[in-house]
Length: 142
Image (cartoon, rainbow, N blue to C red; front, side, top):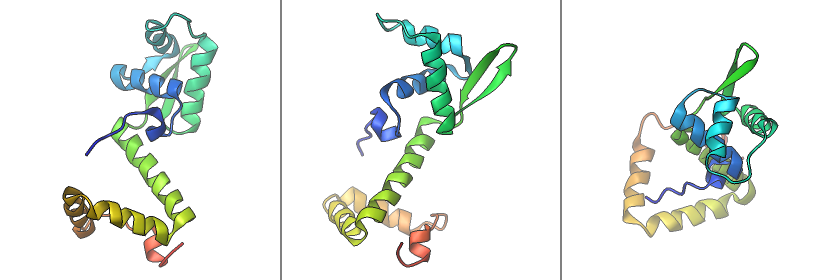
């Protein structure tokens, strides 16, 4: 299945996605280290405060955390890319069902029927014992 890697798929802005890419590749990094990697690829340099603000935004989104190292902060990703993609997919699915209810289910079923590999994957997921049930399932709707 095609996996789109755009920032929007991950629920991030372009600069946020770039910063996450640095943290995923490098591991826990100081703000100055993240900034150095980001600025190595651009003509117009990012200010230290810009990188700090992006990291703080990512922290509010609960995708990074930090520890103090003297007067500096070392930031680390709290989710890998697959976990972030999964979290975003769940959020988008929940919103899709909230807004469109039966129309969303019908549209998804139509798309799945059009692709045999998706039919098999859906069967596997529906038959799996460890598939989490949503409140939508348990309540018979909303």
